[in-house]
Image 1 (tube, one colour):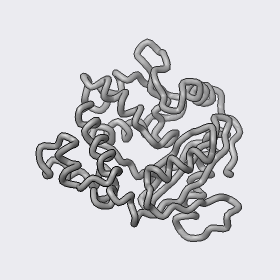
Image 2 (spheres, rainbow, N blue to C red; image 1 turned 180 degrees about the vertical axis):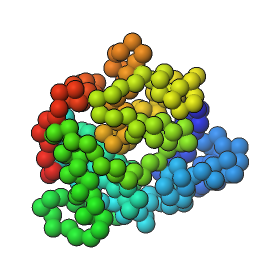
Image 3 (spheres, rainbow, N blue to C red; image 1 turned 135 degrees about the vertical axis):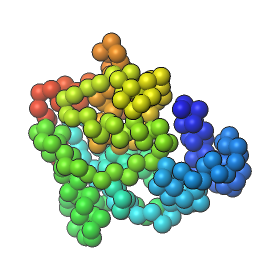
Length: 239
């Protein structure tokens, strides 16, 4: 599973560099095009050609929350939330989103922006729901997610969405839960590759000895999120 994830990551990197699709597939280590084309649309949320061009037809809306854990930028396509990342600097998060979708039509949606349309209205509501969840511990509604990853990663992330607030599991328990008991390291790698914080709550996965393990947005933030879930919530606001 780790090999599959690394190969798929290599394919994405080559496509972003503008390499021809067939050559990118071969250079990434796929033996034939048939091994990547069937699941590629589901993995990427778009065709390989569209991804190579930087998702020119994709339309994304984004909003920022300022929380006690730092800035949280949330972005969504018409299929659901595709990006939710913590950071210490708002401009850096916006740049990160633009790098992931370099040719997509990306529009900011803020409480004061006056933006209209169904996509903006939906994202504004979702962002406010996340803010309320972080601030008060209020349960999140079932928000649609536009998950993009390998088949194994999708299994991990989908399981994580079932973990309720305040409940944790170990990486070994996670691997067993998805029917891959030997893939503990791959499960940990899938958590590290998660690009949708909070909604795919990888912060709730710990080492078997109870240690925090890893967290792509920093161990201090992971510890703070877990502590917050135990005690109730902290203030956050839509920016």
